Length: 250
Image 1 (cartoon, rainbow, N blue to C red):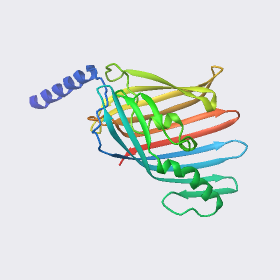
Image 2: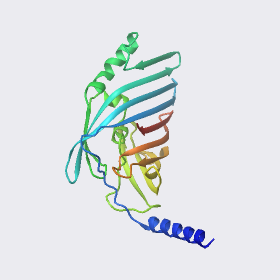
Image 3: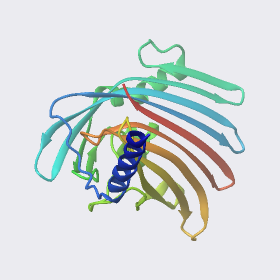
Image 4: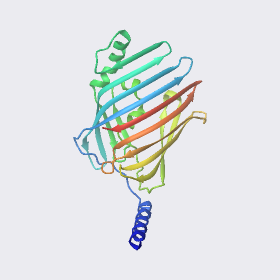
C-alpha cells in the first residue's frame, strides 16, 4: 500500500513538473528524408447553387536545405481525387486514371501543373512561412492558409507551458476577411505534442462571419505534424460554407 501511494505521489509530482515546464518548439526535420501525408477535405456550400465537394490528396514533403534559422521544404503531390456534386451535375476525378469526358479532361488539365511541379516553401524554424513557390493552379484547389499548414503548425518564437496559448492571423482576400486562429498547448501524450485549435473569421467591417475548431498533434522529435482535424463554418455574401479537414502522416 505504501509503495502504491509513493508511486501515485511521484507520478503526480512528475505531472506537475511537466505542467510547469516551458518548451521552445522548433522544427528539426531530417534532411532529404521524405515524409508522406494524406489530406482529406470536405466542403459543403449552401448558396443559390448547392455544392458538395470532397478532395483527397496524398503528397510528400522533404526538407532539402537547412540553416540555423531557416528550412527549404519541397512538397510533391502523388495523387489527387475529387468528387463534386452541384445539383444536377456530378463529377469524379482521379489523377491516377485517364479522364473520362470533357469535364474531367478540363479538370485534369487544370490540376496537371500541381502534379508535375513541386511546391517549394521557405520557412523559419518556428514554422512561419517566408515564401511559397507553387503552380498557379494550386490556388484553385488549396488556399494559401491550407498550403501553409500542409506539414507543420506555426509555433510561437518563445517558450510555452501546457495551458498557454498563442494566436496567429491570416488574410483571406477572397472573403475580404481575416482569420484569427488560437492554438493552446494541451499536453504531451504517447503520440506527441497536442494543441487545441479555435478561431474566428472577421470581415472588413469587424463582424465575425466564421468559426474554426479542432486539434493538431506534432511529432515530439521533429515537430512536424502527425495529425490534424479541424472544422470551419463560414457565412459570407449570403452563402454558407462548411469545411472539414483531416491531415495525417502516413
